Amino acid sequence: MQTTIVAIGAADTPKQMDEKLSRAGEVIRRGGLVAFPTETVYGLGGDALNPASSRKIYAAKGRPSDNPLIVHIADMAALGRIVREIPEKAAMLAEAFWPGPLTMIFRKSAIVPCQTTGGLDTVAVRMPSHPLAASFIRKAGGYVAAPSANLSGKPSPTLAKYVVQDLDGRIDMILDADGAEIGLESTIVDLTSRIPMILRPGYITQKMLSEVVGETDVDVTVYGSDTAQAPKAPGMKYRHYAPKGELVIVEGEPQRVVRYINEQAAAHEAAGVRTGVIGTAEQLAQYHASSVKNAGSRCDAHEAAKKLYTFLREFDDEEVAFIYAESFADALDEGFGQAVMNRLLKAAGHKVIQV
Image 1 (cartoon, rainbow, N blue to C red):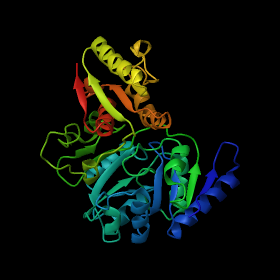
Image 2: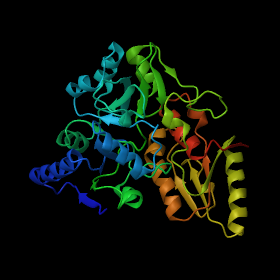
Image 3: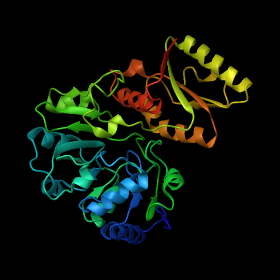
């Protein structure tokens, strides 16, 4: 298969933009696959109501077929057709956070094929705020199933070049536009029980959700690997976001963390092995390794979130074999830091060292 790469930029006239998105939408309507930008990460889109399209998404990514796809819509009018009911709390959250980086889980209607939902009787739905994504969804027929546009298990792409790296020759088209604004996937919240439950943390934090609907809960498997309980979101049981090199998270007093990482890096470098570090701005100048990445201030998890997947991809490009990351565990109760730590833990296979 030859993949068509369509560049979209500020220099495009409204007519040119419309023509490019119409071409992409037609690919979806014919049953093809298109990678497109959102405010979170790049998505790999197919017709959510076409079982064959969903099967193509799983095949292109090498994704387990029990890992449900998120259905992307462009307006509230589209929601009623694919869900059995819209609970009051879901309507409240939609009013507060849609369009935006929030995915909600509903009981699905019969029109949504089981191939899209991973065999479940529920459907995950999101309304992205990225204007290009919204226009593309409308051109595509209003219902676009889209996981992240990467090979399964690899870091999610925030830039089109990483979509090309993973999926060139596997899908029909890639819309190459600006990089993702947020850099982490959407928050997922299950609305099928009395108390809304967060299955994946993201930009929309538990505090933000609770301010709208009252009591919320978090799936116990989100931050821990030592629980015998299966994740409520099937996709969360798989390793995600993993770089080629071995990633370890280091927790402890800042100077001890710096000392430990530098000792490990020195030993690896002496053996001719490239080492990488993800550090906060407060400690960055103290690290010595082949590649040191600045995750921004420890006081602001947003910069770390926006850069994390790009860092992991860059380490792969730089052939880094061992990666050490400062922990964001002290930010677990500070909103967006939850999401950053969740992704780091998944990428590291929950390998954490206390110093």
